[in-house]
Image (cartoon, rainbow, N blue to C red):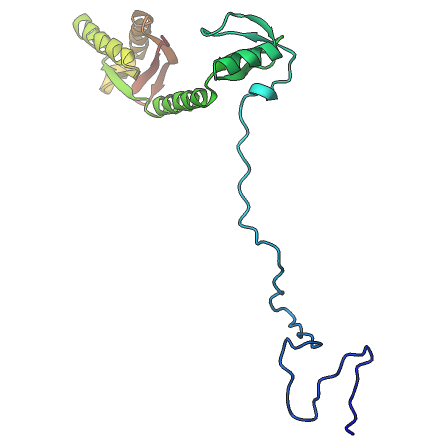
Length: 223
């Protein structure tokens, strides 16, 4: 009778003397591990890429408002102080959101409105303001130290039109040749110009001599 080899645990050792290899995955045979190789698959689900965190709302709305009482304002409610329960009930009846507008007031000020529409309008206004700031134009008005009244009034009228359109005005006196000797006269002319235009623009930079030009900057007054 052929003698069989036995594993100490009772499992039969693979026969290596017959020249036959036991197939990988056979019962009792452990798959060798490969250092640095791929780890065996587990039965759990694979996770996709991590999602970016949700942007936090800039306002407390609805149940996130912690105050016990709020002051309601707006055209769709009667202005006054309400308990948070009553304010939420009104918002629910109007099928809108209760939005905390001034959280530091006592009590906090709230409005009942469509919050998504409110955010859209805010972003739209911010975008328009940035666009206006980026598109500031500067119009130049040139004088000579001996500018007569007719020419002065003609240029004053143009400058008022520029300011009304939202443009800045760069008014300057150009000194040609020996006319630099009359720089005080140029400064007086620019200060007169600033006074005549004060209803439409404000001085951003007082007259400053730069080379052969004395320059003054004016910006439109806010409406």
